[in-house]
Length: 358
Ligand code: F6P
Image (cartoon, rainbow, N blue to C red; front, side):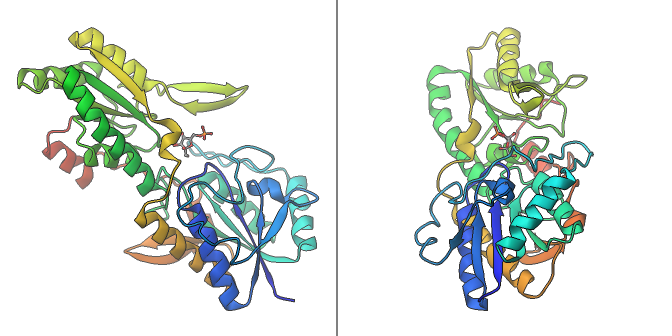
C-alpha cells in the first residue's frame, strides 16, 4: 500500500488552485505517494470524512479551470480568520475529529492550500501533531511570508480588462467611473490593476484619502481637457479620519465593500460630474488562471509534495527571489503584507500622474 497525502483547498477560491492540485498529484505519483482530496476545505475532515482518491485521470485538462475541483469554503467548523492581529483558534474537539478521520483514511500528511486564516488552522493542526504543509493562496497577495501568491495575477488581469473596457465608455460620456476592487486590508489588487489599466486615481487602505483631494484631481484633469477619469477604489480603502465600509452578510459575518459608491457620490456632488460605479466583485476570482498563476500553482503543488517527502512538516511553500522555497508556517500566520505607502510602486504610480487622493 502506498503512503497517502491528503490535500484540501480552503478559504475563498482563486484561479490556479487546480494547477496546484495537478502538480500535487503528478509529483506524488512520481515519488510513490497516493493522493486523496478532501472536499469543501477543512469541512471534508469532519466525520465520516468526505474525500476521494485523486489520480492523474482526475487532473487531466483541469489546468485552465478556475475554482477548485475539490471545492472550498471560507466558513464552517474550522474557520479562523485573521484580520488585524488576533489569532482565532479551532475547537479542540473538532481537531480531534479531524485526526480520527485522517487516521482512518491512512493519511500520513496533509497539504493545506489556503490564505492566512487557513494557515492559522494548519498551524493548529501541526501543533496538535498532524503533519501539515501549507501552500499560500489568495488573490489579495497579502501574506508577508511569500513574495507572491497564485491567484493574484489573474485577479489583476480581471481588473485591467475591466478598466480597458471602462475607458471607452467613460471617454464617450465624459464621465468619472469608479471601480471597486477586492483585496481586503491590502491595496495590491487596486495598485497593480490600476497601474496596468491606466487608472487616474487609486485609493488603497494603506494611504487614507481625502474626498476633496480626489475631487481636486478630477477637476484638474477636466481643466487639462481630460474629460473622463477612472478611479480604482480598493474595498478596504478609507478616508482620513474615516472608517472602512463593511456589510453584514449574516449575523456577525462581515465583508468589506461599499466604498466605491460613497466615493462616486462624493465626486458627483463635489465636482458636478456625471459619475458611475462598477463593483467588480467575484469576477476577480473567477475564470481561467493566467500563465503566471498556472506556472506558480504547479511549482507550489510540486514543492509541497517534495517537502512532505523530505519530512519538512510544519512548513509553508514560499516564493522568494524567483525561487520556490519554504518557511515555517508559524512565521507565515498573522503577518499581512501591505503596500508600502512610500515604496517604489506607489512612487511609480505618482510619477505617471496617478493620484492617491492624499
Ligand atoms: O480574500 C479573498 C477575498 O476575495 C477578498 O478580497 C474579499 O474581501 C473576500 O475574499 C470576499 O469573500 P466572499 O467570497 O466570502 O464574499
